[in-house]
Each structure stands twice: as C-alpha cells, then as structure tokens.
Amino acid sequence: MQNYADAIKEYAENHATGLTVALVTGVGLLALRRWMAGGVCKSKAMLEGKTVLITGANTGIGKETALDMAQRGARVILACRDMNRARIAADEIRQKSGNGNVVVKKLDLASLQSIRDLARDVQGTESRLDILINNAGIMMCPKWETEDGFEMQFGVNHLGHFLLTNCLLDLLKKSAPSRIVLVSSLAHERGHIHFDDINLDKDYKPEVSYRQSKLANVLFAKELAARLKGTGVSVYSLHPGVIRTELGRYLLPTLALWKRILASVFMKIVKNPWEGAQTTIYCAVDENVANESGLYYSDCAPKTPAPQALDDDAAKKLWDLSASMVGLA
Ligand SMILES: NC(=O)c1ccc[n+]([C@@H]2O[C@H](COP(=O)([O-])OP(=O)(O)OC[C@H]3O[C@@H](n4cnc5c(N)ncnc54)[C@H](OP(=O)(O)O)[C@@H]3O)[C@@H](O)[C@H]2O)c1
Ligand SMILES: *[C@@H]1O[C@H](CO)[C@@H](O)[C@H](O)[C@H]1NC(C)=O
Image (cartoon, rainbow, N blue to C red; front, side, top):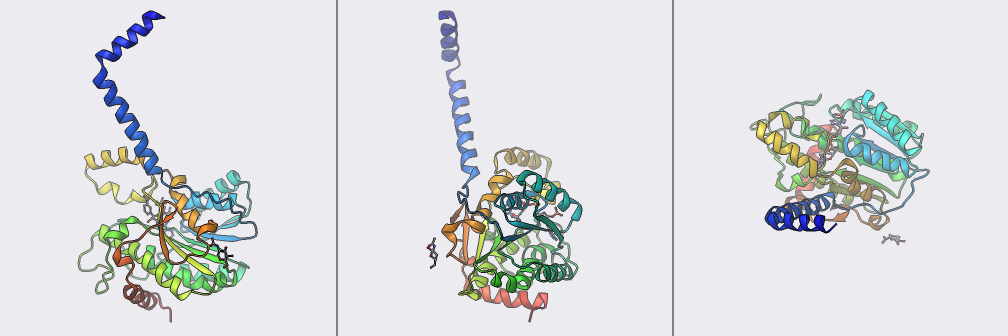
C-alpha cells in the first residue's frame, strides 16, 4: 500500500502544473455547464381539463414543452407544418407521458391561409384554449418568401404568430385566466424594426432579419398585453437560452469549416432541449407570474429587454403594420 501512495505522491509532484491545469479546467467547464443550464421551472401546477396549443412542437424545445404540458395532464395540440414529424413526436409524447390526449394539427406559419384554416378548426372544435405557446421559429435562412410574399423569418416568426394569436383570442378570453407565451430570443437585443423596408428587400442579411423578427416578438407581447388588460389573458415573451436544437440548420452549412468545428464543440456545453424548455414552461404555468403580463423573461425570471423592445410607439406602429400586412381589420 505504502508503495502505491508513494508512487501517487511522486507522480503528483512531478506533474503538479499539469494536474492543476486539468483540475481548474475541469471545474471551470463544470461551472460553465451549470451556468449554461440556467433556471428550472419548479411549479408543480397540474393542467387537467386545460388545453394547450404549441406551434413547432415536433422537435427542439417545442417538443420538450409539449411533453411537459402532457405530463401535467393537459390536452395538448401540436400545431406543425410537417404532419409526419408531428405524428412521430405525438406518439413519443403520449408514450413518455402516459397521456393519450395529445393531437396534431396542420399549421404552416408561412401561409396565411393555413393559419386561418387552423384557427377556424380550433375555434370550431375545441371548447377551450388555456395556453397558447408561440414557439415555432426559423433562423438565418436565405432570402425566402412566404406564400404571401413576406420575408420568411419576419413572416413566420412574427406575422404568422400575430395572425394566429389574433384569430384565437376569443377562445382564449372565453377560457380566462389564460396565457399567451411568445418564444423570442436574446437576439432581439441587437434588433431593429425596419419600418421603411420590413421585408429587407434593399439589403437582406439573415441575422438582421432574425433579430428584427425576435424584437417583433417582444414588442408584440407588450402591445398585446396592453390591449388585453382586464380580460384575464396574460402575455409573456422570453429568451429560452442557447440550446442544442435544429435551429442552426440553415446557418451551419454557410459557415467556414473551422467555425463549424468550433460550433460543434460549443453545442456540447449549451442547454439541452429540456433545459431550454424551462422558461417557456415557467411562463405557461408558474403561479408566481399569474398576475404579470407584457414582461420578458430569461432563465425563469423576469429580465429587462433591450430599450428598443420597451418602445410603446414602436409597439403600436408594429401592430398596425402587422395588422395591415396580414389583412386584419
Ligand atoms: N435554440 C436556441 O438556441 C434558441 C435561442 C433563442 C431562441 N430560440 C427560439 O426558440 C424557438 C424554438 O426553436 P428551436 O431551437 O426548438 O428550433 P428547431 O429545433 O429548429 O424547432 C423549430 C420548430 O419550428 C417549426 N417551424 C419552422 N418553420 C415553420 C413554419 N413555417 N410553420 C410551422 N412551424 C415551423 C419547425 O418545424 P419543422 O421541423 O417542420 O421545420 C420546428 O418544429 C424559436 O422561436 C427560436 O427562435 C432558440
Ligand atoms: C394574483 O391575483 C389574485 C387575484 O387578485 C390573487 O388571489 C393571487 O394571490 C395573486 N397571485 C400572485 C402570485 O400574486
């Protein structure tokens, strides 16, 4: 035994620097990972008898959020554009949660017709809607257009959810107290609403469009909350964290090889989808925020968004522009 101890001691003395570096790096990485993991929703609220609709719930944090809602006993509607992937996700959620009340409905947010069809279906067949989670998103794609000629990221991330929410408001009001959650992003902090060139026709940059669409989410939440005051419908916007999902699918192929390698290492330490869903779940169910509306959250706590996301005039102007673009009176 003594020999072993001596050998270890000798090894440690000879490799002191290396061991210290390894230890500090290890502890540092663990601390970084813990910090990345962010907040957890601690609410035990159950949702029996309640209905939740989630957009883009076939993958990523939307799927994790849907699973959590199913585990709480809600009727869960996965509103997705790819019915095949949606059915596979619904099967998985039913199986993992033991809740059979999980259904899929077709929704392509890049089509105003599809949004109106889904809303009509839901208004006509669902007796209530307690929680609407506007989660679907597309990031940094090439300059694409929606069916109605809107720039894709602004069209899907903002305009699509703007119309969907407005079409479902009556049902949400009837089911009050109810909640609307908008999954935005930290990216809004560097965003601007290009009121004079909303589709970025003059100079399209994928990141500029993404930031604009995520700023629009926060401004929409703020203006919607003001309009819904006194109705019992609360509105929340949030940054979910940096998460290992499919969101980078259009961005990654455009990066240089070394950046892709760096990104794949970075992706190992960021949030997993379960961690990434926590702030959405918090906004959707936590009792502590039941009486709050129009605020922005990150890591299961309120956060002050960027100054341009607190601009009341911009929020009103964006509402009017959006309403005219999607053809709402
Ligand atoms: N991941 C992050 O680090 C991060 C950071 C900040 C904010 N966010 C936000 O979190 C939300 C969820 O993203 P995620 O990370 O979970 O990404 P994801 O894995 O790519 O999931 C995005 C979801 O949106 C759906 N979607 C895209 N275009 C759609 C359309 N036209 N109609 C209907 N559904 C559509 C996708 O459907 P398909 O599978 O059919 O494409 C998919 O279900 C997004 O709003 C995103 O901006 C994510
Ligand atoms: C929210 O408001 C209701 C009604 O005024 C009150 O009963 C409840 O305690 C409030 N909840 C919180 C977390 O403040």
